[in-house]
Image (tube, rainbow over the protein chains, first blue to last red):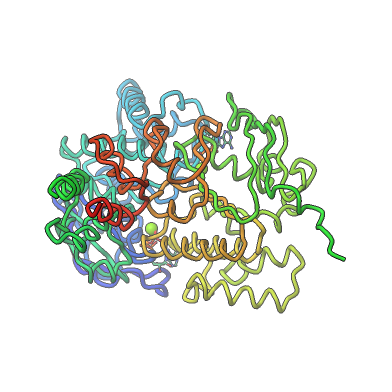
Length: 274
Length: 289
Ligand SMILES: Nc1ncnc2c1ncn2[C@@H]1O[C@H](COP(=O)(O)OP(=O)(O)OP(=O)(O)O)[C@@H](O)[C@H]1O
Ligand SMILES: Nc1ncnc2c1ncn2[C@@H]1O[C@H](COP(=O)(O)OP(=O)(O)O)[C@@H](O)[C@H]1O
Ligand SMILES: [Mg+2]
Ligand SMILES: [Mg+2]
C-alpha cells in the first residue's frame, strides 16, 4: 500500500530529518510509528500524502510513484490527521468542517451528513455539530480533526499523535473505531508516544531514531528489545515493569506479560500457591 | 524584628465559589469551584476531556477572565491577589502557565529569546536573564535547538521550550496543562523528574495530566474533575483506587488496576500501589506473612 525506498529529507536543505528510510506497509496493516522527539516521525508521515517530497529515494502509494501525483490526488488515498489540530481546522462549525471534506471528495450531501453524524457520535461529539472548533477544549478539537478524516474512510489513515488530550475512555472509543475501519480493509498508521495504546491495539511497530528506522516488527518483540528502547527514547509500559519486578522476586512468574490478566493471574498463583 | 509577609497567612491559591462561562457558550465551564492550594503542594488534576481542567488553569494565571472573557461569579485569589482586579502580567511572577498547546505559547523567534521573554517583561536584570537562559537550555536539553524558530521544531521540542520559558519566570506556583502530551516516554520521565525536584525545593505545582502511571507517584494530592466541578479531592492512593475514576473513564496506573482486581477476588494487599515496583513489594510482603 505504501512503500518507501531510501527516503532522505532535510528542511530547507539545512536540518536533516530523514536519513534513508525504507519500509513496506501492506493493505490492512495496523501499525504504530514510535520514537524520540525529533526522530522524524511527523516528517515521515507527511511524505505519505505528498505534503513533503523526498530529496532522495522514492515513495510509492497504492502502487504508483507518489512523485507523479498531486497532494490532492494522494489525499484521496491517504487521510492525514496533523499532530496539531489547529493546523487542520479552519471552518466555523464542527459540522461544516467534516461535511466540507466529504463533499470535496464527491460524497452526496445526504451521504456526507450521515457519515458526519455517525463519526461524531462514535467519538463522543454528539451535540458538537454547531460549535465552532475554536471554542472547544484541546481534546475535543483533536477529536474533531480525527472525525473529519475518519468520516471519509480513506484507504489509508495516517494519524499523528491521535491520543493527545484524550482520557482513557476516549482512547478506547477511538481504538474501537480504528479497529472497525481496519476490519473494513483500511490501513491504519499511527504516530504516537502512548506505549500502552500501541501495546494494546497495534500488532506492528516501527521504531525510529535520528531520522532512521531502528526496528520494524511485531510490537511485543520491538518493545521488549532493550537496545531499541534505549535508542528510541522509549520506556516499557507499567504492566511490563510490574511483571519484571515480580519476576526478580519470584522467578517462577513470567517477565514477559503484556496483558493485565496475565500479571493478575501470576500474582494470584504466588499468593495462593504458598 | 521578624515580620510576616503580607500573604504568609493566606493559602497560595484560593477558589471561592468560582464559576465561569465562556462568551457565547451555552453552559458553564466551571461550576462553583472551591479549592485551596497551600505552599509546597504538588497537585495533579485529572478528568474527562472537556471537563474544565484547562479553564481551571487559565483562572489561576488570569487568562480567565482577562483574555478569555465571559460570565464570571465568585473569586480566585493567587498569593492574596484577586485575579479579577489584577492583570495577566501582574500575576505572572505568582503563577506561570505551561499551555496545553505549546504553539500558542511560543511568541518569539528562537529558543534563547523565548526563555528570556518572560523574565525581561518582569524587569529581571540582564545578567540574571542570561544566567537563566543558559541554565534552562542546559536543564531541558535544548542546546541543539538554540537558534531555531518555534515553527521549525517538532511538537515535542516545542513543548520542552514552553516548559523552559515558564520555569524561567521562577513562579511561586507552576501550572502545567498536559505538559508531557507530545513528549517521548524518556523525555516525559525526565521533565517530570525535574518538576519533582523543583517541588522539593519549594515550588508549588498544579499539573493537569491523563498519564497517571507516570505522575501519580510524585503528587501530594489528586483532584478529579467532571462537568466543571471538582468531584473528588485527596490523597493520590485513595483517589486513584476510588470508584469515581472508573465511572469517569479516567485511566489509572496498571499496578493500581491489578490491586483492585485482586481485592475483588478477596486478596488484600494492605496498601494501594501506584507503580509496578510498589505492587511487587506488596506481593512479597503478603507472601511472607
Ligand atoms: N519546519 C521545519 N524546519 C526545520 N526543521 C524542522 C521543521 N520541522 C521539523 N524540523 C526538524 O526535523 C526533525 C524531525 O522533526 P519531526 O517533526 O519529524 O519529529 P517527530 O519525530 O515528529 O518529533 P515529535 O515526537 O516531537 O513530534 C527535528 O529535528 C525537527 O527539529
Ligand atoms: N474558548 C472557549 N469558548 C467556549 N467554550 C470553551 C472554550 N474553551 C473551552 N470551552 C468549553 O469549556 C469546557 C471546558 O473546557 P476545558 O477547560 O478546555 O476542558 P479540559 O481542559 O478539561 O479538556 C468544554 O466544554 C469546552 O468545550
Ligand atoms: Mg511529530
Ligand atoms: Mg485541556
